[in-house]
Image (spheres, rainbow, N blue to C red):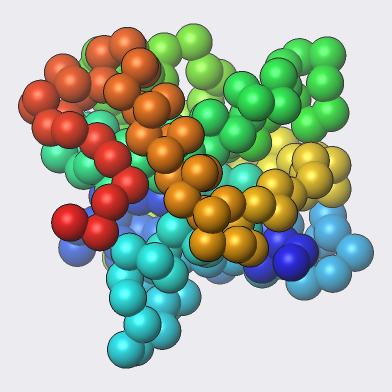
Length: 215
């Protein structure tokens, strides 16, 4: 089975950040990414991409697993209070480490971190990663579209979108083990073992056990 999505957007839900993503970030992100790719981009975001009547856990994981990359939109609650966000982020980080991606590889990463609001300090699980800082543009409302900041936001996104298109155009082959029951169980077990060994993960989300589990 081929990839389903080009991009999986990971964020901690909240009224203002959802408004910013849907009204400010996502429209320009989608259009600029479209200019860089041979086909229209397939973007998953859980506010619109989940199917009514289908198990939330399973469909979310499938969409993440079958995505070429993750756009991880960071805010203080992203790491502090959301086990889901941490799992999404670490799942793609694990795939990135399996492929031993880095500065001399193509793509260099499978993660594009976006700072929506400053996270101080960054948790250990995110330390050392390069990110794009959009915190000066995290405003909502019609008035924002008439400001100089909105023009600067457009210019920055036009420049940064190449990080994402590079990943999509050079995405590594997909692990087909997920297509069998045994393979699915093996992948989930491997990820849970990886989570248990990540340094600093317990302090990141207040000592919660992080696992891919339906319970």
